[in-house]
Length: 280
Image 1 (cartoon, helix red, strand yellow):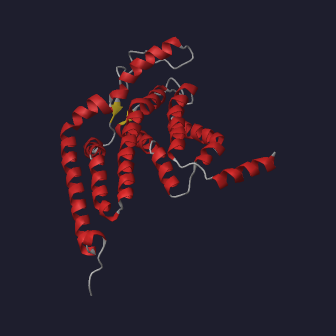
Image 2 (cartoon, rainbow, N blue to C red):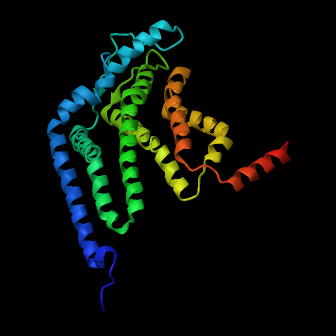
Image 3 (tube, rainbow, N blue to C red):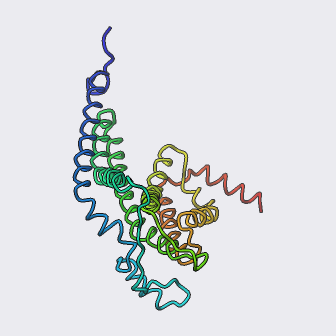
């Protein structure tokens, strides 16, 4: 029996072989970057990951100028702020060294991994599809990195400083473990990276015919409430200032998504107008 031929004359087994080499190259890139990350990880921990635990973190300096001018905002001008991170498990530092090296390698190789995926699927696409998918990969990668940067430089430090200094009673001393710190650090950064993919997801749903521009107009008030709830979940500090710091970028993403989706068809617009007229 002859093998079924696919796009560009490649057989099923040719595609399987190409997939195998794609996986090999991707794993090799992750492995190399993980080794490099493992070697420089002590420096990264000291200067970057543990930066929010010290008063000289760059965000705190800028926030000091803002909070000193507005009395009801939290105080970020305390030069004595410092949080000691402790380790309570014997093997935690070793395993955190390894796992953080892997996560760093995954972030750094993300563009290359996206390129490998693109190179594997591109032969099966038409010219117009290749143009759109290439834009999706570039835009998605850029937005993910921007989200991670916002998570590291804004969301996590604001949340950490509030929770680290919060006291239920003066006789209770906060001792933050390495595992607790890193779990929150990684979660908030990656959550913000994923949240910043909202415009891309909206565009994809629009291309599938599942979303149009009228949705954003019709459900804007619902979206504002939902984004406020999401902001409160991401930053459980409770004060309006910290909440707004997270809410404003999320709402901006919502509005950006509106311009990336297709406008509603004329029939849809007329149907909505009739529905609104009946309600009135």
